[in-house]
Image (cartoon, rainbow, N blue to C red; front, side, top):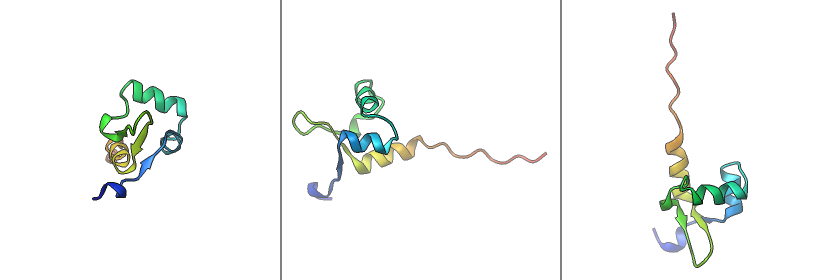
Amino acid sequence: MKEEDIRLLDVEEMAEKIKSTVGTVYAWVSSRKIPEWCIVRPGRSLRFDKDKVNQWLNSLRVAPLPVVTL
């Protein structure tokens, strides 16, 4: 994959993606709740690699519990 193929999300787009606020995004970055490998820091900006964010969010999904019949 070429560098220009990487899609970066800004803080506002990331907040939309996780259905939260910009403040929460900054707090999660500060407290390292968002993995460092998702974060791109071009200069003093804060961006997020969309593909890596999707991988992270997918890893948080919990498999459904099996149905038990009595």
